[in-house]
Amino acid sequence: MDGVRVGTMVNSAQIRALNPSTPSLVSAIGLSDITTFTNPPQRDQFPDSRDFLIAQAEEGVSIPFRVLRINVVVTPDGTVYQPNQQFLVQDTTRADGFLYEEFKFSKPSGLAVAGDVTGYIFVVDEEQHKLYQFKPNGQEGIDPPPAAVDRTRNLNVSFGELGSGPRQFNSPSGVAYYDQVIYIADRGNNRIARYKLTTDFED
Image (cartoon, rainbow, N blue to C red; front, side):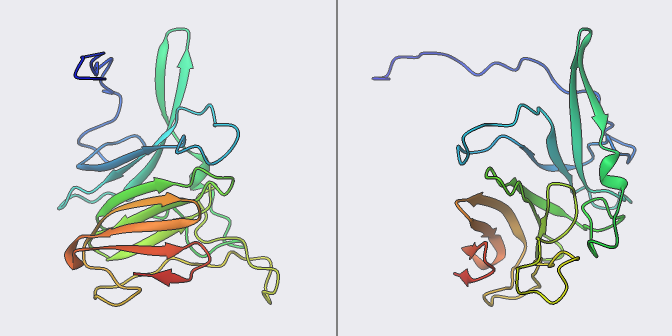
């Protein structure tokens, strides 16, 4: 304010509980992005969860689960970082794809969580040139629309391939969400691609 220094950023603690070398459900190998579940004020109440998502983009390493939800538990003895076992439960009657699906991602480069009631999780993969969308429970897709023939299975809305067309990307490097609009940093095409949550799109 008016050139007056009012404070500094303090590194309160480093998270050393995540394994930097051995893939697991609590590893952190070649981190490329991180996001929490508390996002811009799009709803009346914020979740009190301290959990966060990380993306592991290390090349040349076999990493079955490259996007992880780390559960954060505060105990009297300190903060504990735990694996999310619930995402391993894959209901194939409801969805064809899952966040915790082995080798789902090649090089995840961006993460975002919808701050509204949908709680959608978005992942962009730089190597696959693709945008993935998941429900909060880790199932890929969205609830089927009322007019859908099959109302029992999620509608898969993930998309993308290499190119410069409206639904194509070239090495996307980031993703953001606000007010039912998804923004993709389409690095190789030098553009920001904008998509409405209705699956309509604009460049």
